Length: 585
Image 1 (cartoon, rainbow, N blue to C red):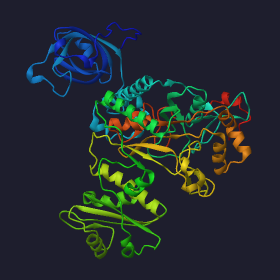
Image 2 (cartoon, rainbow, N blue to C red):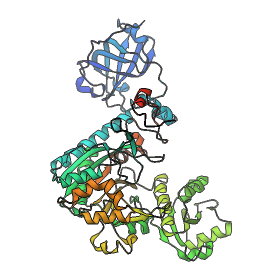
Image 3 (cartoon, rainbow, N blue to C red):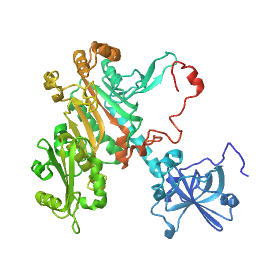
């Protein structure tokens, strides 16, 4: 039987991963988890792990604690006291930072036992076959892995570097409310019923947008915050209902002032955290140029292969006279084999894309195509494809066709290894449309949010041709992902009211939802603008991870459910007693 104790005597003097040859001959005390254990008759080898790393410890049958050591297993928490010794040259493990030494155990203490654990955290290859459901159910075990701890340490370093930079530039860190009034910003709000105010609700803030603008009106001039944001969106592969923004706002600035300080901050962060030297300024292209060249407003510019318009192919595909025909020509398409059809169709199935054709010409072997042989050969001849090249052609509405091919281009860049790993390619996309048409309702909606200022030269178009108005908005793109978005804000009440009116708000609705903000604009609002980084996405890219869930300690799954805590869950009955007005069936 194990003796229950609430204290332990072997309190560590060093981290497991800190030991090196210069510690040889020293007596140390280590605490940690047993990463693995090998029992060879009269000698037992332990790999002991803590956050700093792993070191090998050895105990022999001569040691009075040997019997206790024989009962140990993986993930037991132990304390050891022992002598650091150099390993013989033939036993050095060059793959471990501590591989030149080991600890000869003198004393051993079991601090905490562990049941056999349900996921193989000690083996990265086995973890690749472990379902995400199991990983998230036992997230506290998953987080013991070196990869996951490295990711969260990286996240902490990025946050620290951002704070250091913006502190040095005179910004003030200010917290804004999470419980606020519902002021929709494009997604649904999470609503929180109020016990003290029956039939009324708080909303969890989708972003600090209005509050940070109020801080500019309040005269703080330079603000930042690591803000939690909440959006009740439909499940999507890489979205979370709660996420973290690095949010900042500045007064008395124009667009270029914001862009330049963001570039400086990224240069500082990447140097401090990854030792990478970024070249600034970052390239800038307009939204319309991005769509024309790359199909989407978040292109990966680590590789080429820009889209082309090939309307001369209309006849070949019997495309309508109003259809636009666009093409992505790319090397290595044949390498996808039978998966080519699925990959192409996954990007080009949206409404507005009338048809898709592809043909890939391998170095050897048959043509890969979704066309009859004669059409495939004609397409290859017309496009003058060489061996090893392929092309995907789509026709239909310009924007939908472009976005489909642009999404495919980014995807192929990753799948085919066209994008250089370890390279960070930033790009500013500017001059977005201020409005777009909601496909479901047919109404105009803001491309970003209703507080974005139009370009001064386009203000006269607001009434007559609002869809032609360009915004003073800007997105920062990194390796094919949008990592930050911002704008110069409206700081005049008349223009802000005009914006709300264009979006279909009556004066009554306008004053009900935003009256407090409109009144604030009457008391001397400075010109201001800012940006918000998606911290989860930025860190995921820096860590080389595809999913933001790999850099969040306790994420929800793809269905917005938490398998660990089984959340969301039913509310305790005693809580509902105070909310009798809230009917729950």
